[in-house]
Image (cartoon, rainbow, N blue to C red; front, top):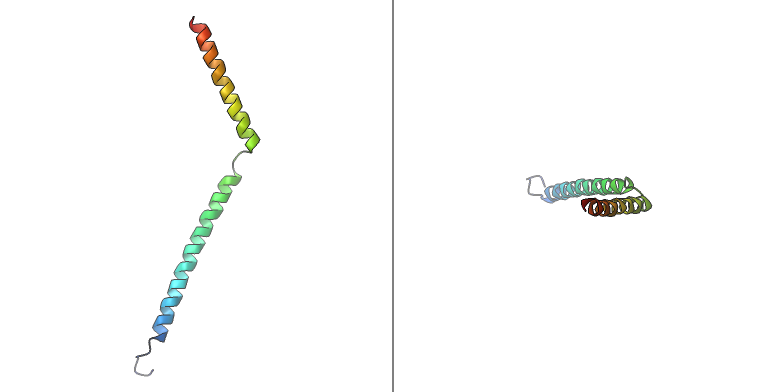
Length: 72
């Protein structure tokens, strides 16, 4: 309206600004998800994890046995 009483433009601007904020938030969430996926991709394979666990356990048991035998 010519006298400035029209609030439709103000409401639409507020909606657009709200949508812009939502878009920014979704973009940030998307970036976080991709970072998490990239971290998962950088992990060693499952068989390697099990192999390292078995090797560490065997070394610990061997160290315990040798420590017990050499202490006597």
